Image (tube, rainbow over all chains, first blue to last red; front, side, top):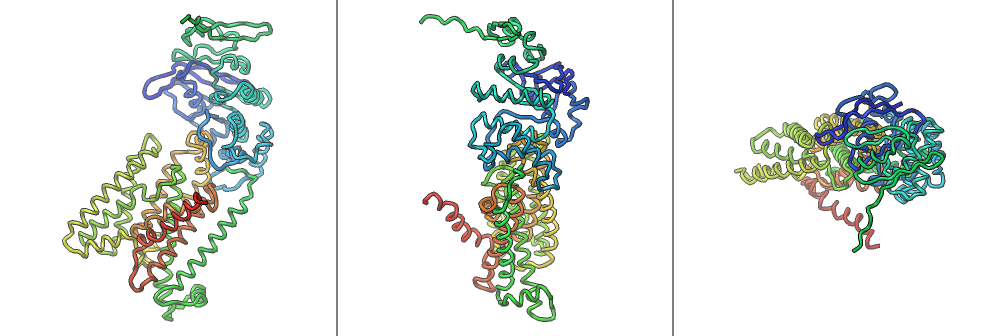
Length: 262
Length: 335
């Protein structure tokens, strides 16, 4: 569904990523991992068409992302960015309903039955019914993340790009959020790209992992292949141990230096 | 944007109430003046204009155009303030932010000192106001969009520059009458305004209103922040240029006929939000209605306290409006 060909990105005049090529298929979850500042969020924004690329080509269903009009793009691709300041004076329902904005021509001021169905469907899909009349600003981080995803579902997007959706969440809410992202891919046929920091969480929830480092894409495959001790140690600059468990599960640990005695 | 399940009953009731108040204010303002008319006579003349009578001539040639212009100025300033406050998400912004009033004041001061015919002054003010807004917008431009910080800084800087020029012209003008004319313009007034002024200003104001209303749904998207709005398909750059363009056009139209009438564009958005909340579809419409009410009432007071003398409209609004606003806004803390 999404295809990147030799994409290069510049930030503030200097190239931060070069020669990035991978595809994201409908029905799969792809995790973007890599050290801080490597350009994961910037790449995600570029895939969403929210920032220009320096070279190469990004296509959505064989059409260059730059040729989409803003509204048309948002009808197909939902970008869910890391938490900013919450909008004031809005209920959960209002925030979810914002997902209908790309489907509304400028001259239509009121909601249609289609809008109502989409919002109700998104609320049900994300189990937000008990919260829908609560003020958004009063929610916890985990609940807010669920609301942003519900907004993307109401958008009726087919590609979901999530930028560090779990950065403020505890383990349980991390699992719930990513389980929801998996359902969007595996059950609803969406293409999901999610930026993550925790390698084990990425291995547990993503079908494939794209590892960014050294200004390019170093690997894009299953966790069992991408998690190579030498490669990870080189990218992150610290010793990393990888365990292959029976049943195919892969775990990666940072190996802390031995504590010296004072 | 806003939940399709919301009913809006209380907001729409508030808007309907504001419209009723506006109608009452219009009729009241038309009937009050040096010659007072009973409501019945006003309504009769509105439905069946009869210019052969003296009452008909006073109403249709003096009173009604004057009230219409007051409503136009108030609606324009209220809407312009609402647009800029919504886009910049800053409740301290007023429509003169883009330098329109200072630019117009500067041109008017120089124009009066140079002896420009008073009939040409509204056009001069309009052109200068728009030109200043263009310079401010050009300075605030970054890439394809507008930077909020640069817009505010450029507006404040240019306003300070032009205010300095105005003071200089007043101080250096050899005749006291010149200085007084400039000061009268700065104080804001609708004295002597007629249909011809209303016609020109209403065309520009109508364009501003049309742009503003077309932007309403997208302004709601901006409540989620610029990045999220972009992700929702809002063309943020276009909204920004639309808001700055519409607000400048509305303010220039108002300034050209009324001089500088402060406070309206700052206060009306606050009162509006208190009545109907934050949904741009409601706030844009309501701010026009409330702005019109405020200026129509203030102008009626300005010309009725001691006729035929008139108080400067802008001065009156500041002297009476600000204390009321402070009372309304700050009494909550005591309670």
